[in-house]
Length: 153
Image 1 (cartoon, one colour):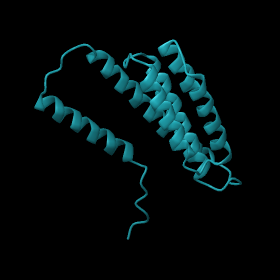
Image 2: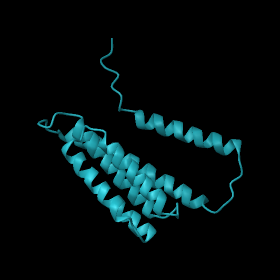
Image 3: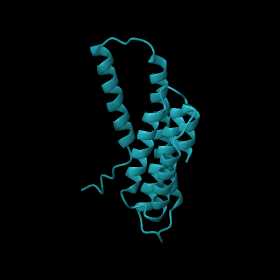
Image 4: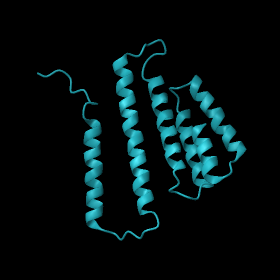
């Protein structure tokens, strides 16, 4: 519902039927967190945003990104273990750190987009190479500690 609110604040209007569909699908996700309905929620929120908001660099896009990150992490956390399983403090901490990293990356992406919005950025091999290198480094940094190599020989 935060994404719907941010969409309304960014566009100044909302489509009530679409909002009701998002709300209904989110309720289904509560009952069936390991289904693919969450993907449909993200899709409908994204299409709603693209159809109603015309300012692509509005700060409200950060609110939508963070709400989708929280939604995705919640759905993944709810489906990673049986419903009766208890979460340890270490598990909660790990999931919160990873989710926070995604949110920080979202804010960074918005900041870069807002900084270059309205400027003509000519094609540059250096800019593309620097961007790809940054993405690769971020991927390696994000992977560090998340893949269990298992016991050594």
